[in-house]
Amino acid sequence: MGRYKIIYDWDSCIGAAACASIDPEKFKMDDGGKADLLKGTETEPGLWILEVDSLGEALEAAKSCPVNAIKIKDLKENKDLV
Picture 1: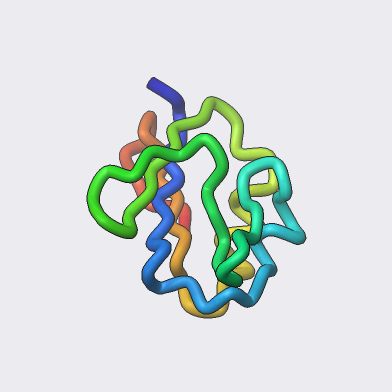
Picture 2: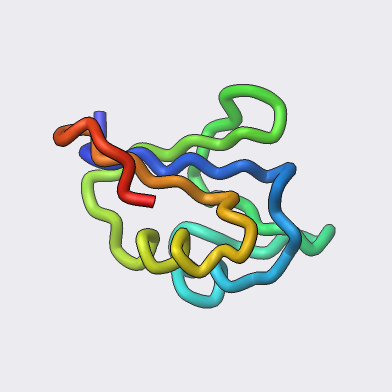
């Protein structure tokens, strides 16, 4: 289990591409104009989860999303960062 959980709501994505430009290691724009959470697992339709030990640029990517489609939770502290 990683220290952080990235929670991405694909259905809420409007394709602004800020996340993919800030953190291309975790987000990539798909052919339909929405972002994909790379290496994420779809836990229910449209909801993707990725647990990581290090956030890298994911925190800034989440903060840049204009529709708040990306949430980040610190699992050790049990609190939401975004």
